[in-house]
Image 1 (cartoon, rainbow, N blue to C red):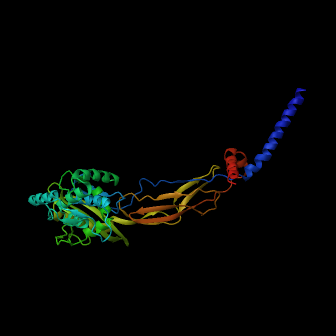
Image 2 (cartoon, one colour):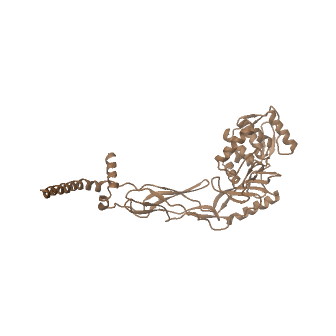
Length: 414
């Protein structure tokens, strides 16, 4: 009797298993499997461009860069040093951020107050750069920016800061926030003019500032202006122009006893048949003659200091796929990408985007890699180097944790 009962249990269990197999078998066979996400392969940390970099002065603090977003090549002091009238570029950028000017327009009228005239008189008496103003007169925003930037007028720097922000203190607070937002962490401003030795920065920071400033069309236009005349007939020449080397555009050129000679510049040139603009900051130069020597040495070193480097190599894997059933495939670049890069510096890393994939034949587009240097953006397609196919019925039968959710998802999508 007990044996007969056990037999019935065994028969029932076998029947349940057969029934379950009859239900699960088709599920295992038909259920879609989940797509597989890709994993980007990090660029090697030690990949650098071979060769010798540019010649930069050891004195002061120097930086050069190709754009505002790239790390600058630096030489000299890594501690912040006085920046002189470079601070006026920061004043200009903040004023334009608060009161943008459209192309060709003069902008709002700025009334000359008693404080503005007092500042003019003070700078005149001190023998520092100033442009005459008269209480009750008016300057357009464009005219005031021209006086501050190309005539390096200290009283116009104060006038613009007071007009745009209400007071010098409010301006300094806004400037500190702006510097932080733009990643210029080694730069601090203590005044709107740069006469204070506490207005400081590094060559690396201020090379990036030069690139930021030249990205503003109005500032780029103003600093290239040889002479300006206001509607009321006040004329002033460009005192920041740099004539020590052909093709170098002075963005800011100034001197104080504490800062020495300081130059921010842009230098458009062609290297390896590639057009490029280099932005630089030479701070703390001992004299204008030495500045000319150092700038010429830097420019002379450029052809051998940069090269068209392969930043993405065709056939190299920049991502991988690993499926739940053990299949794998690499995402390889379909073509090489080249970009100008400084010798001795890390290769620019590309940004990898990988699609999720299902079953896929070899050589399909599975993503892309993009390299951005300055305003130049290059992209190439990534393709898979190995097919990813179905794992087969046996794997499906023994992996219900993957198969059943796929089947349920298929039903819910209907």
